[in-house]
Every structure is written in structure tokens, then in C-alpha cells.
Length: 503
Image 1 (spheres, rainbow, N blue to C red):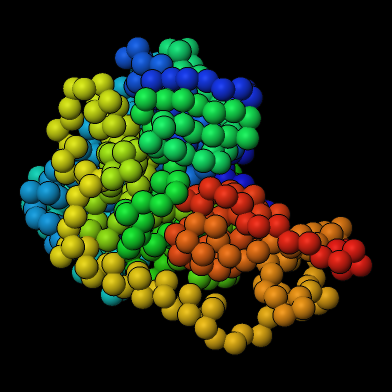
Image 2 (image 1 turned 120 degrees about the vertical axis):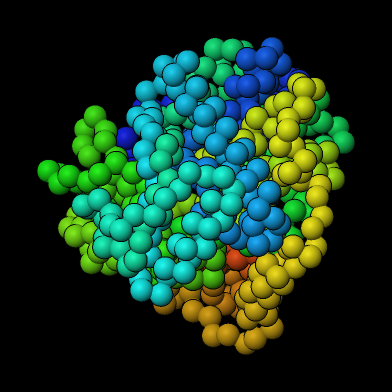
């Protein structure tokens, strides 16, 4: 079962080359998702010399594996922000996110970006009888934050039935995130930004202002790590546990489905929307959030499919995908300069399309010396131990449990000889634990199971054919190459005797 998002499957291809020489710029932006591309566009438009580096293809990371929903609330609930901080902070979060959505809309209109942007209502409702309390809490928090929310008795025809009244917030939005980001990257290039794809960063030297790839280096006065979780070691990574959320797209056919964002609270916590493309119309269903490296990814996708079939009548699945997110322990993202001197943007939870745009606005304003009124609210250097304590302790305990299981308990590991094709596992070879993958042709790839970030042990992700670290979310290909940071170095390659390399 392969994974490709509906956005990747319906977007125009990119055309950027890899970095193959040394260059210099005012600013090096690492990461070609919505945060990095928007930052590069804003800086280039203002006349700064910018180099944008993307490890894969523009928009092909978590931006291209999102829901495409844009909203001024937050997925974890404004009530959670209000409880940890105050009603005033919740109001500021909503206002700042509203401005970010308006910025996306202004780019679409001013630049003529064809990404299906549309304003639509958001509906939040209980998908199970016991979840109505969350809806009521969010309604109260949203009203106290000044949002024009209302409660209605029923949902439009199409989404699953609601248990109780439905919270409605008008003038939210949806778009095709990959089409938007790739078009914005083209406009950044037209403004002078040098964009490089397939240029994974191998080293970042903040003191020297150097970013190194396999093909060349970038010497820059400032470095922006728009990489979801900043590459390397950063204090903000403490307490932020990575999660993966799963999504699918089903052909809508002749079925009518109302425009809008539909969030069902409850055990399955589903997000549902429709999508119209030039080739077909789809019904998107996203849910089943799980901790990275601490669950069975195939089982999570199967559970999402079962929920979509049961609650939405889905018959056929055209696309399947997942995305990674990081939730900060105090309910606010980290945006701005951290102790290393780099600019970072992380802790967005599943709200990254809007927070990424907001982060680009804050960071570019700071680099241009003109200030931003939201900088202090989201500053990356903040310390809020009381507000973060509960989340930090819970997430640290979760990671510690996995680390203890991996390192301190005697677990039975699969033998290399019994490893089936198209499968990966931690195996024992001559008393040494190794991460082994046998491909469809029988060839075996063997690497160290120790993550190169902070030495946790990676786990096999059978759905996406990757080694995932449960501690800080680094992901590696079967041969050890880095797919996603914060790790920069690949898993160490191991060598097997000739007779054990194929089967």
C-alpha cells in the first residue's frame, strides 16, 4: 500500500534544479513548505538576496500532506489556549491567524494563483455522544475571543450526523496547498530568489553562517530553518513530541457535498471536506493522529478507512497519505530567533498552513527591521514552565517508556533469515541489533537503528517504508538517508556478509 497525497497527485510538476556549487546570499531559507516559501517570497520581494533549499520537491513535505483548510481557530481548541494563557491571548491567536489567512487570500488575488481558494464556513460538532462538552467549551472560548460563532441545530446534508448542536464560524477558507506553494515559489524566483530542490542540508554552522549540502554551500548573513522541527539540536525540541495524522481522498463522483470544513470531535476526531480539481472531485477525510514511531501506521490507516466507509459511505480510496506535526507543550508555536541565532518556526500542531504563513510574516518583518506586533506572543526564546509543565511531563514520560523498552528490556527481535520481502524490522545479527529492510527483489539494506539526532532507536513504518524516531520525529529511508529532521546525518550503514545480502 503506497502513500501519495491528493495534492501531490493533482499538482503541476516542479522545475527547480539541485544546488551544485557554492553561493552567497543575505538569507538562506531551509525548507520548501509554506513557511519557507512564503518567507523567501516576502524577503525577495523586499529586495533581499535569498537562497531557498528544499530536500525534496517544493511543497512535497507536510505542506503537501495537509488538509488544505485555513481557519482562525486552532485544532486543539481555543479553549485550550484560554485555559493555559488567557482569553486575551486566545483572542490574539485568533486575530493573528485571521491576518495570515487574509495574507494568503491577498497573494492568490494579487498574483493570480490558481489554487482553488474559496471562503467557506467551519463546522465543529460532536461525532460521538460524549463529545458535546468540547463543542460547548469551544463555543464559549470563541465568543470570549470575539469570534462571530453561532450554534445551529443540524449540519448540512453530507457529513456524518452530529450529536448535539453544531458550532459554525463563517468566512474560513480552503485551497490547494501544493498548487499555492509551488506558484508562490515561482513568484519568489521571479523576484530574484534562487530556489534549489533535491538539496538536502547536511550541516548548519550558525557561527559561520554556512549551510552545506552535498552539492555546495550557502554563505548567508541569516539562516531560517523552516523545517517543521529545526534541524540539529534546539531547546524548543524538549517537550514537543511528533505526531502523524492520516488522510485519504475518495472519488466523490456524482455525490453532492457542501463546501466547508467539518470537524467531528470524539474518539475518531475526523476532519472532512470536499475538493474540486480539473480531473475529478474528491471527498477528503483526515484523522487518526498517533505518536510518530510509537504505533502501527498500517493499522492507523486501516482504522481511518473503516471510519470513512462507515460514516461517510466511502467505497473507493484514490489517495492515502500522512503528515507529521509537532505540538508545543504550552499551546503556542515557537517563531523567531532561538538561542542558536537561527530563525525557527515550529510547534504548529496540525495548524501549520496558517501558522506557517504567520511565521513567514513575523520572521521576514524581523529580518527587514520593521517589527511585527505578533513577535512577542510567539517568540521562540520564551520560557513558560508552569504553562508547559503538564504537557512536557506527559510527553517526556511517553518517550521515556519507549526508550526503556528499546534499550533496557530484553525483547525478542526478528531473525534476518525470516524477514519477508517488502518488510523492515529490528533484527539481531551475531548479537548486534540492526535495522534491516528486505526489498521486493530480496535485497537487504542494513543500517544502525540508532537515530543520529539524540540516539533514540528508530522503529519501522510499514505504511510509508521508513525508519521513524519516536523521540523527536526524525525519519529515514530504508537505506538510512534522512527523509525528515531534526536529524541531519543519515543512519550509519552496516555491512552484511555476502551470502546474507539477498534472499
